[in-house]
Image 1 (spheres, helix red, strand yellow):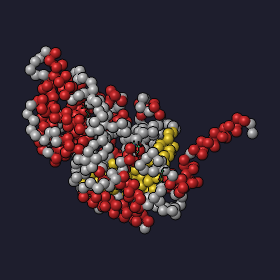
Image 2 (tube, rainbow, N blue to C red; image 1 turned 180 degrees about the vertical axis):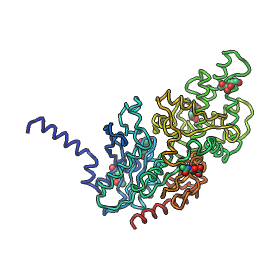
Image 3 (tube, protein in one colour; image 1 turned 135 degrees about the vertical axis):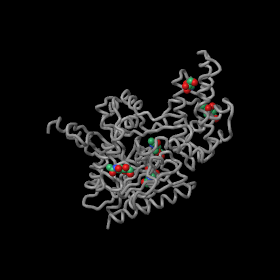
Image 4 (cartoon, rainbow, N blue to C red; image 1 turned 90 degrees about the horizontal axis):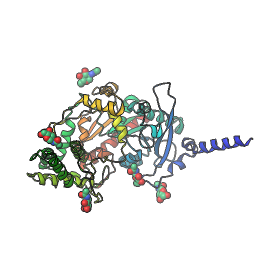
Length: 496
Ligand SMILES: *[C@@H]1O[C@H](CO)[C@@H](O)[C@H](O)[C@H]1NC(C)=O
Ligand SMILES: *[C@@H]1O[C@H](CO)[C@@H](O)[C@H](O)[C@H]1NC(C)=O
Ligand SMILES: *[C@@H]1O[C@H](CO)[C@@H](O)[C@H](O)[C@H]1NC(C)=O
Ligand SMILES: *[C@@H]1O[C@H](CO)[C@@H](O)[C@H](O)[C@H]1NC(C)=O
Ligand SMILES: *[C@@H]1O[C@H](CO)[C@@H](O)[C@H](O)[C@H]1NC(C)=O
């Protein structure tokens, strides 16, 4: 054999033996029980070749999609159910780390655990570093393509990992991942037996819910801990405007003085150089209050930031009395946000340009929000504690054209996924925590016997998907019990 060919053969052999799917078939159980000791959960990382475009026949590009797999709970003989997490907008290991309930249930029901990464996030970038640079490379970032990826993988799973066997597959997801799991069961009912869609705001679209509902829910979560706290936050916007404008003087110098006062009070990393910067500060504060409502968990957690139990209680301890002077109000708002960003005491300054977390793919989500995932929000300052802002689709759309060269199609998700007319679907659990702002766009009343809604009054953003904890409120424990019973029934029904 000529040397060149031997080399080629060797390369092919190496590539082939690195191919996880190939090894998988031959090593099955042993292989599945191997673990990744870096992680709290013992999974193996696999890659699956996907088509970049599932819906056209011109672009034949392919990419490697990442999956995390653990098979150690499976019965020693073949079989058992598969639990598949439909990954959302971020690094899949992050969701894996924050979805302990799926692991606990898999152990109990002897299920295989798989987490599928969403295209254009984490390591699953169709065009590597170029994925976000060119609109023609970015256009394959859609929920439909992501669902088709999952469908392709589950088909491969059934035929290659479990040939000739009856395998019930249940999909799980939280937040956008929950929307995907619900939509997956609607669009590919032959592929999976049911879906647990936790904190999935499938109705947070144009004309389906009031645009003010989201920020109203944030406000209610703060009020729930302390009504005065919400009032102080409502008053803070005017105070910031007033101080930033330094209404006692009109000279340019005085404007600078007012902004400097705010910058110093909040120990900002960069001074507030313009009125636009003051807008950035207010947007950052608003996002901080929203994020706090999402992660108002009953025990210390580190989902977006390291935080104590019931973080809003902690934040509101600084804002629990009426604050009447500008100085005391600004100082207290600073102390409150400082608890959120500086709970570890390591922040030397506060950065108003900081992303909520490094693990979320904010670029990708920004693009999705500019195409299909248009979720209108507004506030009036009365029903909520925010500055009055109307929903302005034209301005939103212009910003999208400027940033991504795309025009949003806000009605498409409703045409595509049915809006409120989804009673032809079945076997989807919609769970929502009422502290979670996203519950405002969720399904909070059962739509049919096989589309049950589960409400968790003391729950924040997909609390039910997190690991059980001694400090869990009773209602989340009950929600998990119900979810377990329903999923167990789906599996039973499938075998019968
Ligand atoms: C996973 O690997 C670590 C380190 O090699 C080991 O300590 C641990 O017991 C293993 N866990 C399982 C479930 O195999
Ligand atoms: C998931 O948890 C493991 C440790 O348990 C950690 O090494 C890894 O970085 C975490 N992943 C993310 C994205 O936080
Ligand atoms: C400054 O004053 C103007 C007019 O009163 C107002 O519209 C604006 O919101 C104020 N605040 C800031 C930060 O611009
Ligand atoms: C963060 O906390 C530490 C310790 O309490 C403190 O020294 C530091 O000034 C705080 N950072 C900010 C931005 O307030
Ligand atoms: C969908 O539901 C809404 C509200 O229930 C109703 O007004 C509308 O006519 C329905 N649309 C279709 C296509 O069934």
